[in-house]
Length: 565
Image (cartoon, rainbow, N blue to C red; front, side, top):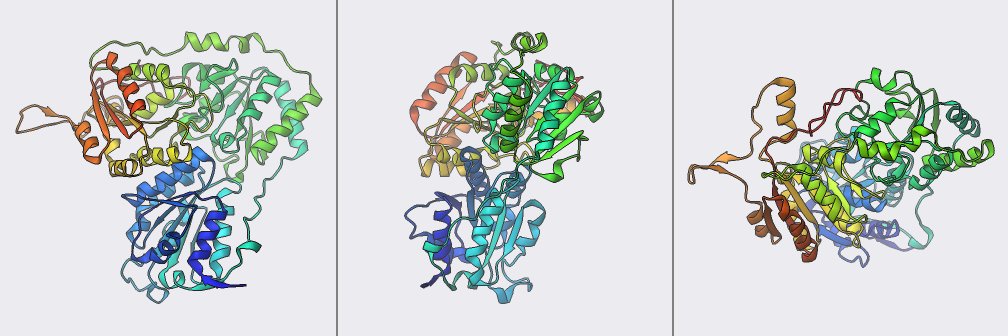
């Protein structure tokens, strides 16, 4: 067996695990890794502008592709800059591997230059973190990291590499090495049968399609089971796109921030809830007494810690959701003939029409609802949309039509501002054949705006639509209704030189990075801007000046949503 530089072995492993892109920033503490990466014929490196952006890009790549995303940084602040991205990936169950450089082993624990214990810092927000102090362990550590990131509930892993460990050599034979097997636990047949019995006994059952169903590539199986049993389907925010919005069984999203009225209505009428791959988060459930009253719950999740943590489970199935859905469909066919939908279920398409929110506004400044009407009509079903926290996300989730899994990317758990821009770059690289559109706000766009340079530098043609209301919109609305105040939420400011409120000129900002930009101020201008952005095949920023104080529909419980459209 030949002896070779250990970082060359690591690059061989990354290639073998299917890594095609690495999002990173080199530094002195990680240069042996970069020396080996330079020789790779299979991996493309993108020079990011901030390590947080690198983690978000890896995250977006993973969400769009279903594969593991990889990001790299040097020692010290590079790792601490990754913390937000690792947290976002952890709470949303996204498999990424973060690789960091480190000072030499002899300097660890001595407060040496950039010798922070990043492996210890990120323990609470990763599935596993390593500081590898023995060169010979590196090949196995990297293989194990990919298995951990993928297996069970997916999530992030960090590998910290002391500089002298990176410089070492190792005996490694690529021909006798390979990815570790991923274990997928199947469901207990007795529990599968009992779940079906409970569904058949229920008067008004409903299925929840959560993000775990999308990650398990099991949306088709869930829809088949729902069709066979004639059970309505609702989604969480993370499950959006798992079932077509025009499917006759689809009622909509359930929630207090990201709901649609028919989704909440159908859920409230239910007496049995079957949650597939969901975690019953607070912005989905709202007040738990309302959410749970009069209902039994079946919870299917691969993560044991999620069972019973928020909603009591009358029946729990801890197993891979895809295997469970297939087993349930087989058992359903043994227990009952295909069921006909009840009158209540037949009325769901009409309910969607009757309870739809208004979008056809013609006012100037543009109502944001009109923006989403134009988005729904212009962009096709293969478009991948990326968004993040704020009124832009709430409007998007409440008003947009998404037709396919992995076509709606959003950091539902952490909600970091700025996530969307680098994530959209990762998504476009993962799915180059798809149009990628980032819908963001004027304040959030500034958080990781430096990564626009990356999109231009590597010719990643993403369309960026900024909903510009000159406010921290969600905070403005919360202040207004909860605290009866308006304080520290204005982003437009008085310019002493010109004497009137100044907007950030996102057109000039885009052009400064080498992107294309244009401003839209009238609703009839939206479609033309979209057409030009798609035709350009280049990073394109559309700054849409919207009504400054449009409030969105929210509530504290799913039976008390205040409609504000």
